[in-house]
Structure formats: C-alpha cells, structure tokens
Length: 434
Ligand code: URA
Image 1 (tube, rainbow, N blue to C red):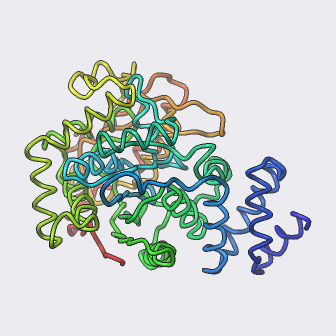
Image 2 (cartoon, protein in one colour):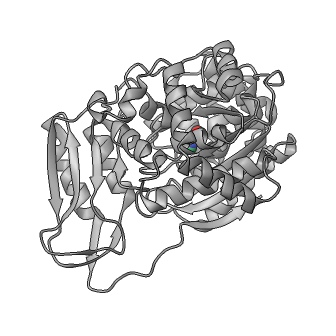
C-alpha cells in the first residue's frame, strides 16, 4: 500500500477502509510515515472530511496505538470531562477537583495548547514542580488514594493522538470535526473511563464556529461512546468571548484558584458547576441532575474542591502554596494596557484574536519543539455587555519578551468592538446532546 495513493484518494473525496486507515495511523506512530506525508493527509481530511465509519475506525486505530488502561481495580464509577478547546477555558482544573471531592473517580487525561487555545497540561505545568508524565501505575495508585489524577496521553496510552495532535497544532489542521472527534475519543476511551462529559465549544474562540457543526461533532462523539457502552453527555457552550478574564497558563491557574475559593468570574463558575453536576450525575452519586447541582455547589462553597486540588498538586510534585501565593507562579516581567478608543458598550471580544495574541507572546507553540512561556497572557478588564468610557482599560497584556508585543497589541485592540447600543445577553450553555 502506498501512502501517497491514500493521501490522493482522501484529497479527492474518497473513503478509506479500515486497513488503509490503520496503515496511516500505525505507520505514523511507528515513525515509518514522515511528518510531510501525514501533514498532507491531515490537510486532505480537513478539506474532504471523513465518513462516520472512517472516524470510528480512526478512533479505534488510535486507541490500539497504545494500551488501554484497566481501571476496574479502582472502586467507583470513573468519569472524565473534556473540552474541544477554547480561549480562557480552564474548567478542567475546577471541575475535576470538585467532582472528585463529591466522590467521582476522575482519571483526567488532558492535552497541550492547540492552535490559539490553551491546554490543561501546559497550564498545570506552570505550577512549579507539577508533573503530568506519570506512569500508568503511578496514576492508578493516585486514583486509589485521591480519586483524581491529571495525566497526558503518553508513549503507552494513545501515542498516536500525541503525535497527531502535535502535528495538527503546527499544520493548520486542527479545525476538523473528524480529527477532533477521533483525537478526544481515542484518549478518553483508552484511559478506561465509564462515562464522559464533553464541553463542545462554538464561536469565535472555538475550532468550530457554527452551532450546526458543533452539534454534529457532539453527536459523533456521543455515538462513538455509545458503540462501546460508555455514557457520554455533551454540552454545547458559547465561546464567542474568552471564558473568565484570564488567558495564559499561570494567569489561568490564578483564576482557577480564585474560582475554587468561590470568588471567580460568574461565567466560569456557572459552566464549571454545570459540568461538575453532569459528572456527579453520570457517576450515579445523585438521584437527579438537580440534586447533583446542589452537591457540586456545596463542594465549591465548603472549599472541599479547593482542598482536593491542593492535595493533587502536592501528590504530583507541585507546590500547593502557589495557589495562595501567586508570586510562586511564573510571573511576567512586562505589562501593556489596551484602552478603549471611545465610550460605549462592549459588543464583542473576538476570542480567537485574544488567544492568538497570547500564543504569539509565548503561551502556545509555533513549532512542535517550541517551549511554552508559562508567565505570559492577557487579562481582560471587561466582558461583553459592559459599559466603558473612552480611555477605560479593556485588558492588560503580560509578557516576558518584547519581540511580539506590538503585533499582539494590534490583534487585541482589534478584538474589542465598542457599540453605542448594549448587545443582548448571550446564553452560555446552548444545548445538551446525549
Ligand atoms: N482536544 C483534543 O484533545 N483534541 C482536539 O483535537 C481538540 C481538542
């Protein structure tokens, strides 16, 4: 089988069979298919799409690229949560400890920054000492002890996703329903969960811009889960402005800390509580979703989610004091304010541009081997619907190196729209699928 023929067939809109998809996924994971051919294949998928059968096969091949973790020895229903990616989307670091504090067993397998969006692993690693490269045995032991572990896909678990994810990040091939669905579902099914809550983001800061496409992605992932008897529920949520105020790795950890102390932004708190409630409900720890919502809220208000996060940070080698003393986190050396050119109401904040600006300053990668700068990012001062005066601060850029600050400032300035009329409030949670 010649790889070039498969690329050509996909490019021309053809369907690949199981043997052909497995040739591509296995060959690439083993290093036999080079980056340039896989990049071409991914771009062909980006334009031509994949049938449901191809996506299922691709997911299976990615799961089989490594081992499937057997968590049957850990008592309790294992539930994870995953987002399709957004700007300022830090809910995993809030939801996982809240759910674990309520008794859900959470093997959380997260990703790194992708395109203009941040990744939970990069954010966690901004906490000094925090390690996400645990072995399967270490992760399982921590799950027994604390009911929560944060890990990344590894050489052993879904290695194909690790390699494809890094390649998609730097080849402009992230925004494909087929590739997102197979990426997320392969690692989630390989980690041995019983149930999964998905946050499918839609809007300017998401990879999926239209609700109809978000619905198709959600249905595809719910379907993949159902075929292997896993309960999967997806919320479709608005990503037309950053979630919360902070964008950038360490900056987001600070906002997580405030949110777990019940002093966080209302949109972030609301979405985190709803995702947590769904996890509690799927774990059968509450008889109704309404009861699960009460449990989630209690775990926030009584501080047990915050304490659980600190325990997990300690267990994974990090310094839990960093949640109280932000000077212990990486801090930027420079700051620039962006101000409003006129008075009015904020009618839009293009989240993708805020994410791009943050990536440009070092919060994400331009090449696979790039290192993240954990200190940099953007903190919004306003959200959509708020009134501003001419000269009001819209946001602050935090950087450690001047090189891209000018370009980042221009992007951010263009991201804010100020209108004379107040925009209608947008719903945060748009739909539930599954
Ligand atoms: N999250 C993932 O794990 N994969 C994607 O492709 C997008 C978001």
